[in-house]
Image (cartoon, rainbow, N blue to C red; front, side, top):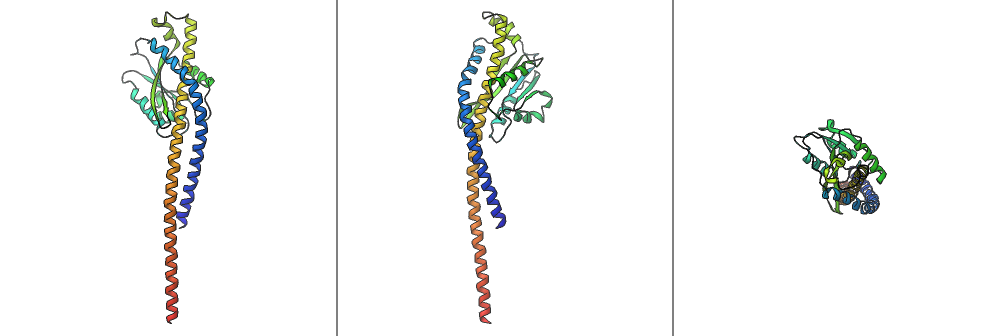
Length: 266
């Protein structure tokens, strides 16, 4: 009985923790969703620019940078593993590639078998709301990679509270865009360079905002399911505890009645 009672207490504490985490995630989710509404048009506009002006150059000898965007925190369902699994499916067989891990969960996913490919790790995602200044600093570190020509930014895209998918965005180094003939019709070299640097920051900011909303929605779902499961388990254990207590009381009554009968017969 003591063991079952301690088990019930532990499950009840877990339910309180998961319920609190769900409420905290819900508060953060509302703020992150508002930020995404603002960031998404800018990110899609930057992507649309490259869709209208696709760059053509030989990529066979280039090192491709893959940038999966997750978070530092767990307990958010399958979101980190799905993004990293999608990234693995995009790794080329012929080309060399490197990894820029945006989030500790990305680093942990690739640490065992692809440690040598990890070129840069960005921590701190998920602890607080990411700003455009943070995205600009990440962009600066990405462009600081000496052999960076172009890369694939892989992130979760928020669809609704219950579902998301994984998207891939391409980013280019400013020299590649400046030298592209497709963009000769646009402004001067310095203006194109400034725009490319800004567009990379915008795309990274958009990807982080999308993944942040997906993470918080997934955590809310995970904590909701955990709280429901904890409640069901607590009820089942309470029934078991009551049944065991009734059995113990019945056995004691039987012993008392049997002993009283023996004494009365003597």
